Structures are given as C-alpha cells and as structure tokens.
Length: 296
Ligand SMILES: [Zn+2]
Image (cartoon, rainbow, N blue to C red; front, side, top):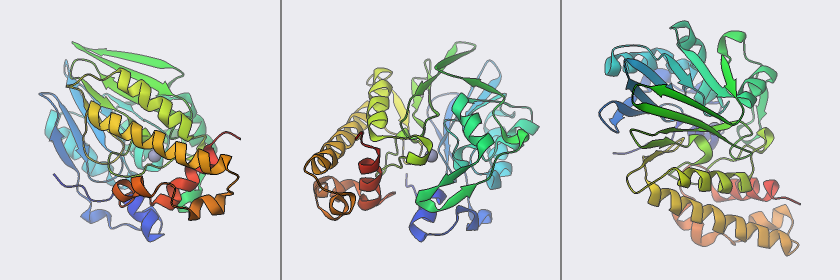
C-alpha cells in the first residue's frame, strides 16, 4: 500500500495553510487490522475504528473538512456512527471532526490538556498556523489525566497519557483483544516526526513515550502511528533507535558548545537523515525541534 504525504505535512513543505487544500479530492481509505477493527487514513491523522458488542469507537476525528467523508466510511464499515471518539492530542488534523461526530451522537474523550489547549487557542510556529479558541461544540466531553479504560464486550480499550512527548496532552490507545496500538503523533512511521514545542512537546518525552508504547507490544501487535503506514514492535524499536541516536547527536553538539545555527548546519545526523529525512519533516526542521526541546 502506498501513502502520500498527509495534508498537514504537505502544507508544511509547501509553506501554505492546511486550509488551502482541495478537499473534494481527499479520499479516506480503510485497511482491516482484524475482524472488527480497521485503520482509516488518507486525510489528517490515521484513525483506528473498532466495533465491539455493537458499539463503535473511533480514534481521532480528522480535519473538519472531511467529517462527512469520515462519517460515511465509518457507517459503511460498521453500519453505525461512533459511540465514542478518542482525541490523541489537540492538533486540528486530529480533532477537527469533533463537532460533526458529537452532533451525530458521539462522546469525545481526551487527555485534560487537549480540552485546555482547545479552549485557549494555539499557535503552531512550524507552519505559522494560528488556531483560534474552539467552540464548546468542538471540545472533548470527558477528560482523563493518567489512564482511562473502556470495556466493550470482550475488548478492553486502554487510553494512557504519555507526558511532554509530541505535545503535553498525548494519549495512546491500546485495544487489548485485537492487539492494536495507536500511538498518536508520538510516532510517524514514515520520516522525522513533529515535536510541538509550543505545546510542551520534547524529544525526551517522545523517547520515554515510545518505551511505554513498547511495553504494550508483543511480536503480533499492530502499531498505528499518527501518520504513515502500519508497523509492528520491530518498527517501533527501529523508530526508538533513530530518536535516541538523533537526540544523542544533537545533545553532543550542544554540549560541545554549538549554538542552534551551528547545530543546524552541521551533518551530525547525516547517516540517519539519509533514510529518514526524505519524507515528512526535513532534517533541519527536526534538528531544531530536538535542539530546542533538550534540557538546558
Ligand atoms: Zn499532531
């Protein structure tokens, strides 16, 4: 299966607002991960959709502009609208459909900082995007701080918070019976990820979060990142290695007294860049995120 760049990242490369996309052409697609669980992808962040005991749960709500398409593909697959929606974090390509899903009857769940961030409005420096404060109709209905468990028939769905990783409000979602893990944007399995420093994200948080994610995995776990193709425990371990190596290289440059400009210009991460710097975020952008998020 092939993946094009998500609209979010494409907008980053083109230097245009994500709102300037041709939404008519955006198509959502599904990939079965088991008998009653799918990955949906093609617009904003990857989704996981699961139905158990006639109750559908959807991870992330995509861009607001694709809500109709999202509801249509969910209904086509499971014959109903989701009863529950989980937001993995506050970014607009993951929460944009909240309003439409809530109107259709869903209850939206998220870490408490997602609701706080949405209420206050945000600025995404990396794509120069101003996110205005959200309306009540867009906000998560129910929040949690550390963990939340949902039992649907035989399926135990575990939501757990990983602090200061991609943002300060990240949640991962593990479907115990199906053995599927959604990591949110803590992992992009297709290139360097985005660390939203303005929202409290840090490289050390990403590394810690991936270690926690790995503790949920065995050899059969299917791992869905925020963007990019499905992977597994090996893929997650590979990603962890890259994050650790990259952090090490930039931390060394910083310890050697290199300023940001110098670290950005150096080739300390050249080996990793060769494989990981061609899609999603370019090496220099990721270097800057890592450099800025390292502890002083
Ligand atoms: Zn994100």
